[in-house]
Image 1 (cartoon, rainbow, N blue to C red):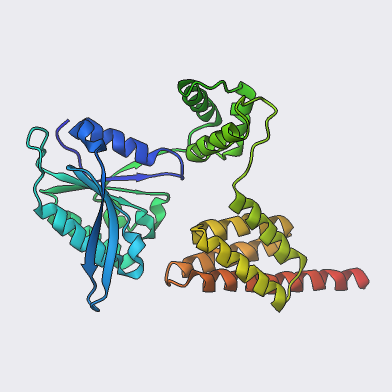
Image 2 (image 1 turned 180 degrees about the vertical axis):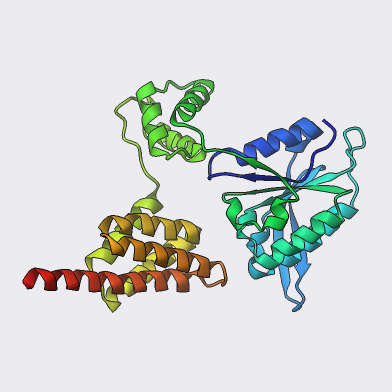
Length: 325
């Protein structure tokens, strides 16, 4: 296997995109691809602002998340690819005529960064290959998609996850009952990473891994569910301030804005009826889009909650008026 085009892996979280990429790189470069090191790269924006981005790299590839730079991701994309494309590999035995750059969360890049990426990937095609991966290809501009071989990674089925959990626990010298394995697979919502973490949590709780063992959900999901219940139970400025503190708590624990927005939406939609569901969906889509345009995520999350509180309160009041008359 001597060469491959630029690649775009896309699929839901926990489906195995990163694993497939590492398997591909190991096939091309050998076991040396697993000798990883963390490096710091410094960049200077046109406004003279200094950025420091951490990368994970081997002698053959480099992995970076440009969206960590926020609105300055275009600088990271252009400068990093230029630097990597101009450097030579150290080991000549397994040397290819190109190095590989793995870009994560491509769907979170700004449009400027994506257009810069399109131009850069054409310019340095001779000396480097790009492997991009993201959850949704719909947020990647067509110009990039047309220059890559797209590989869709589907979420594993419940049976697949059950088999993997059984295999992993067997290799670890543990006995996992088929019933518990299936329950974990169902709870994981077809996310293999989540399923393995749940299985590990069960092992910490109880070493026997019995069939009737309770499965713990992540603390932040329970916290988010309580937050949604607070929004529905009372709509007032004081309650909005309490919700703001809870959202800040989630953000400081590094819970992504998308996950908070998605979690609130899924919980709130259970309390909506008819036209209110449509209005909630439009609100969530609108504020989720706005959150990608700025850097103060709390503004958009709080605005979403405040707007929902307003329309939900109107919905409740209208319902009470109809009951009275």
